[in-house]
Length: 211
Ligand SMILES: [Fe+2]
Picture (cartoon, rainbow, N blue to C red):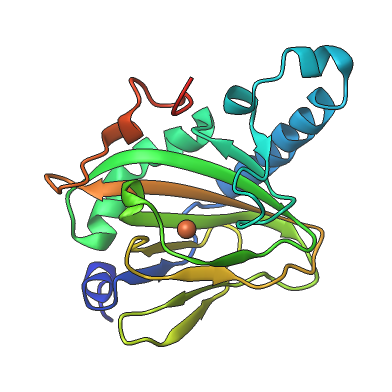
């Protein structure tokens, strides 16, 4: 069987099942639902709005509708950035690269959301995205175009991760027909690369990019 880092070297992506094992992935999934509910409640109350900060609390659709018009987004979430830091050694092994962690992201997609075909900014040279859980009749695939211009459909179970060169392989999602879908993203740069965006340019992990 071909090793994951060999597959990654040849294809610029690799899919790994159960990267986040059960029951840890269930823990993350429940956390993402609580975080989203907390944000929705906070932004629905007068005192919550007065104390609300999109940078610290998360926001609804930070990308002008391009990445899911109803999606709930959390940049630099402390738990997800813990996953980012603690996964460094594994992601290095699966890619065969020496890496530096840049940032993590958590997103709860909603019914009707989609993601336009795009490639990522330079802090995402090595992107890894894992499904945490969903409520939907069928799983919601992410697509990417590989180096040979083939469109690849990746269907994930909770805990499965797709590692890919986010700046090189265009990726997208078609319209989501389920209720919600929770997904985490952890990003790295190759060490000594021109884009050595350690901590995504922040003084610490788990803080917003610009305050
Ligand atoms: Fe992306």
